[in-house]
Image (cartoon, rainbow, N blue to C red; front, side, top):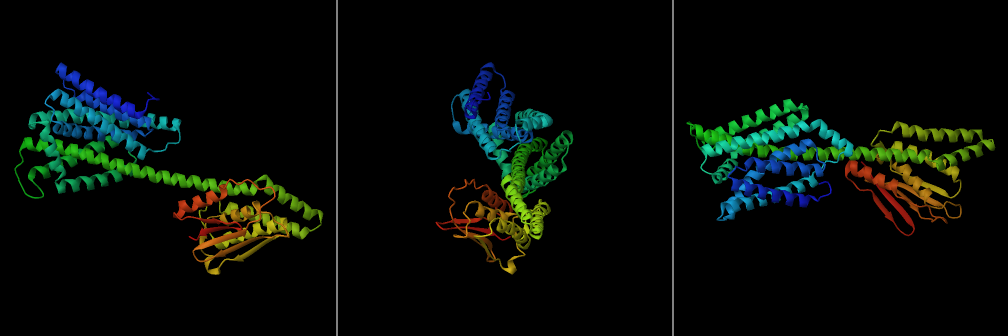
Length: 457
């Protein structure tokens, strides 16, 4: 089954629904529970194939069966096939196809991205009780609903009219939506265990169903009928329970999906920040940087320039101190970043004594604004990495600000042997700004210059 496409699985289960429906009709046996079991199995299979969590699967088991009950009755009403047995078979086939396609679309749209197969299996093993509860809940609800329908309702067709009557009652609808939103948001924050949560959900749905049934039976909000007939009240309790469970499941799915997306965004930002921090540290401890730094230091020592060597060591230590101080920071002031960049520039100017010119015209009023840590240094490093530096044709870098952006601009002097560029540094800088503020980093490359504008935050 693992390699079978989901569309084929849906077709297979739809055909199985038809077969069960026809066989039960021929044998004179009620097919309700068997069709419910098939529908739940289809739901679980699709959710497993899409690697959804147990919690999401359980709520879909309940939602799909409620919708299946409504769609099945709607289909039977609109088909108008003279053969009742054939009408029921066609209706259940179409209902299964619609529910399967809808569930698959929902699963793809809100599929949580688990850390991996092992983590996904572990989460299922730990939370399988939710699925057991959902299956038992659906079976009990179906049995009770069938009993009440047979005893207090004229036909299943009348059930739909009554359901829509409850949905059209504005007071009931507002009560259900508001109470469910409050309860779901509160309950999800508490992290209850399975037994407490199951009992709480059951009691909550029961209380809301009784309240809304009382509203419906007394004729509120447009009238008042103080005497409540027992049969009518029980009928309304079951109908309100069906509507309440459906609304509860829909709201739960939406809240769950929103929570998962928010968590995914948070995890993505955390991952991007860690990647960016790793990139900046890697640039400072890569063999080329250390090799060049130690060579320059060795040359200064050999020449007897003790003061210059000491100053060089201090500049180098400032760079690593800055990286350690701002390791967990998401933003730093331009003044701090500019000081860090100045230390780095002085190291570069020792390495390139001729042909490397930097013009710093960052406005004083912008120095309190915020940028991503190490972004300025990475752009300076890129300028020297991808361009030739010589006294005959100097590499000119200009740092400027305009109140909205910090610009790093340099002329282009192609190297004789071009350095391959992956663009990783600039990519991570861009991603940091998108994660933090949703703003884009502006990059412009022409025949003779390269310009990057970093938004000021």
